[in-house]
View (cartoon, rainbow, N blue to C red):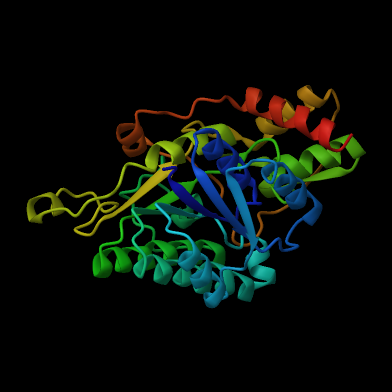
Length: 336
């Protein structure tokens, strides 16, 4: 029988690509999404229209903050795997609308954990974020670094997800894996992300906002590398550690069946270089408005992915030049 996977946030950027990929690997995918208007709903609906063409995909419009709806979907299907990608994204928006982050990222996640508690799920994987590293100065960021100093509410909710998952792994033996994503980009991406909004503004002749006067670096990770990593992690199910293993110094591991992985490209790109690549690919010059660093933002992200490389024998390798070319090709086609 086909393995059944629940993907929450299936109409989101990562959820859409992952759903399509797993369908191609002969999984039966049940996708849920609330189709909220945080960004252009027509983009989410276009992703959904593509997914609905596949026989192995079933969709339900559900908000994970509603416990009964989550419980009902778990009662209807016996999921082998659950991949929680639903949640309110965006660092800056968490300053404007903090309650939406509590509703989705905290209340929603406890509903997923509770549903997994009462159903036999082989493995729960969930979206965390590089934002949990907050004000850390030591790079590259390692899963063994302390992450107790978030600089945004968004980051705090993602750190909370990791703590909540650990408690459920410990109490109920639910194998959980947290995925710390580093600046995911590519076709069908999120319009609130810089690479997307910069492309739009450069094409339309509008000035782009260059935060911290361009003194920023991001570890851009192409969507295909993210999806391949998640797919390979599905069968890598965390196990309990015995007393001796527990003392090995890896704080990303635990006596509980729990694990955390960075998923990044391990190749940070300076913001000015990133803009120049966009200009070259678009054959247009950007108008730049240099402004101060925004509240809740961080100067640098840089992933140490050694643990992930060991676990799945795969390393993200798509260059920023190749990745942005593919994104721009998609953008021009989609927006005509």
